[in-house]
Length: 253
Image 1 (cartoon, one colour):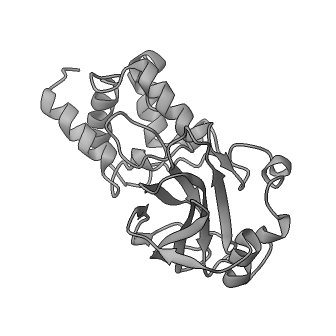
Image 2 (image 1 turned 180 degrees about the vertical axis):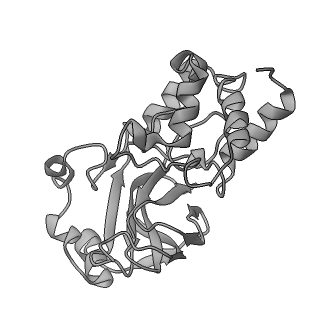
């Protein structure tokens, strides 16, 4: 089928649109900000999917190939049309582009997915995850006690240097996208708390001195709640919080 430049631009807009394709919620994409890392980076897509129909089918309904996938069936559920999927594919087929070469893209991917340590079992096993943190912190039902268990105190300070990005409304509490980045210096860790969850401590990330304090992940929320990112920087704890309204609970609710 013919390729038109406006299809590529429209495809990019759809891929980045949080209410449409929302590819950035799970995948790193060149030029994309606050991308998630629960899915593979979208690179060399034409080489990975030389058969266009295979990629179309994956976007339309990925559960056909993997019934346990987290990826929503965008086409089957009517989130995007066949025409919109084709435009997204036109854009995906341009990756890599001029703004990020292979080495830099892999460097950024590793920064997000490998140089941080998650304590929710996303990147390492639960046994290793708990090694540096009190295991009981993940079982405590009270937010204040959970925070104190992690840090030894409840001295938190709000900071405008933390950018917490979550949806205003999440239709599925089982997969709520959360992105955090901060300009604070000497960041040691970022912890995510969900106030009204049965266990408020959701996940945690450690950072080395050479890694950038940026995370993109998805969390479970049982009901409408405040999501809080706590950043440990220079020995102090800084926070940013926002309420997320949930229409379908993801913690058994």
